[in-house]
Length: 311
Image (cartoon, rainbow, N blue to C red; front, side, top):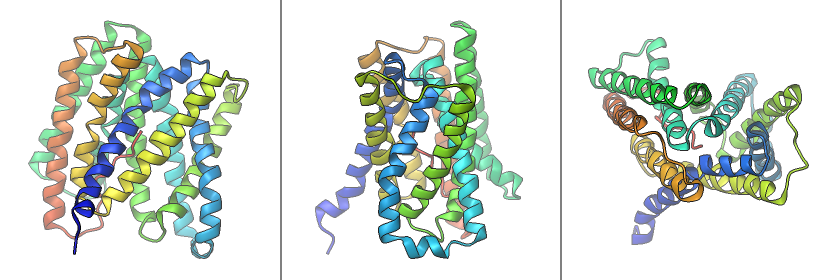
C-alpha cells in the first residue's frame, strides 16, 4: 500500500531541489563578493563533493567500479569534461551578468539535447521546432538586452549559453553511463574528472585556491551542500518516480527562484528589456520539452531523458 507520504515524497523532493538550485547563482555572487573567484567556486564545489562521495563509492560500490569497461570509462570522461565546462562557464557568467538572465540562458540545456538528437538522426515533431525557435528568439532578446548594460554582461550571457550546451553533452553522455552504474559510482567518478579538469584550468590561469575569508569558505560550503549535493541528489530521487519531462519543466522554476533570491540577497534585478526574452525563452523550452515527451510516449528508444543538470 502506498502511503500519502510516499505519494507526496517526489513533490516534496522537487520543491527542496528547486530551492537548492535556485540559490546557486546568488551564492556564486556572494562568494565573489567574499573574494572567491568563480573558477575557484566551480573547483571547490566539485572537489568537496568528491571528498564525500569517493569513500561511499569505495565502501559500497567497489565491485561496480571494477566492472566498468572501457566504454563506461569513456562515457564518464566525456561527461566529466562536459560538466567541468558547464561549471567553468556558467558560474563565471553569474557574476558577469545578472543572476536571472544567466540562470535562464543556462536552462537551455533541453534544447541542446534535442538538437544533438537531431544530429544523431532522430526527427523531432513540429512542436519541438516551434519551442526551439521561440527559445532561441528569447535567448537573443535576453542577450541583446545585455548590450544596454555592458560588454561584460554580453560575455556573461554567452558563457551561460555555452554552459547550457555543455550541460547537454553531460546529459547525453550520462544517460548511457547511468545504464550500467549507480548514482553514487557515476557521480563520484564524474565529479572527480570535473574537479581535476577545473583544477587544471585554475592552475593555468593563476586562480587562487585558498586564502579566502571565512565568508568565502562559507559560501563554497553552501554551494556544495545545497546545489551540488542536495539539489542533484533530490532530482535523481524524483526522476525514479516522476516523468523526466515533468522534472525538467519543474526545474525551470529555478529561473524565477534565482531572480527572487537575487533581488532579496543582492538587490539585483535584470534590466527591464531582458524580461520579455526570459519569458519567451522559458515558454520555448516548455513547448520543446512537451514535444520531446510526445516522442518518448510513442518511441521506446534509448533517448535522452530530458534531464537538465541542476546548477
